Amino acid sequence: MTHKKQAMDRRLALKQLAWITGGAILIPSCDFSQKSVLEAYQKLQVTEAERETLAHVTNTIFPGVHLKKADEIGLADFVLVMANDCLSEAEQIDFCTGLRAFDSFSKKTFKKTFGKMNTSESADAFRTTMEMEADNNSAIASVKSFLGITKRFALQGYLTSNYYMTEIMPYKMIPGGFVGSKLVTEIERINPNG
Image 1 (cartoon, rainbow, N blue to C red):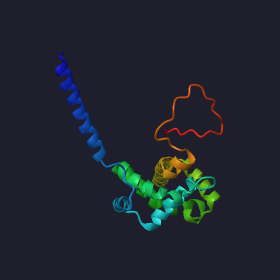
Image 2 (spheres, rainbow, N blue to C red):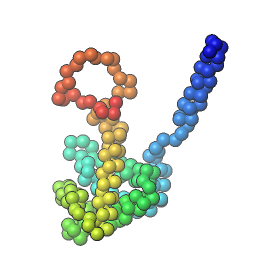
Image 3 (cartoon, helix red, strand yellow):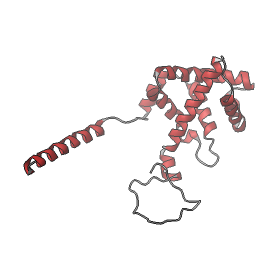
Image 4 (cartoon, one colour):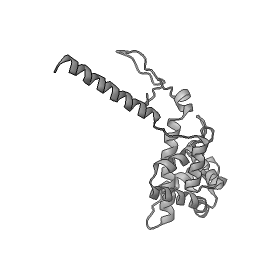
């Protein structure tokens, strides 16, 4: 292969890399703006009362004892957008069915709607519901599916939130220099994402 041929191949490779990079920049990423949240409300047909139930569930998962509460980060909206964008149609139907049935289920099972429970009652109700057997009972199955999806997306939203990445486990955009031997202390915060 001649020197001229190698130079042309390098130019072609660099040109293709530039096109790929430019395309990747133009591809829209996950959007959590107010418009995107409203689109999730419309597609999933979530009412304000159902959103409050979802917010209470996310606050049960992240009650804000030592860290910020789920409401302060906006996890309910994150869960709605993720359910709208990332779930299949069948999973979306299951999620919405469980969300709509959750208050009546908790009133029937625990003698209180989930929104009226205090923090410890709602945590116990959440744990008890997740441990229930769903044998031939579609109400329990859909509620467990709703709670599982909500828990998964709430955890994902919390661990990737601006609050978590800047205040709890600071993310280093540019890693520091190489340290050959370093003692790891118990109190050191190590971000698994960066």
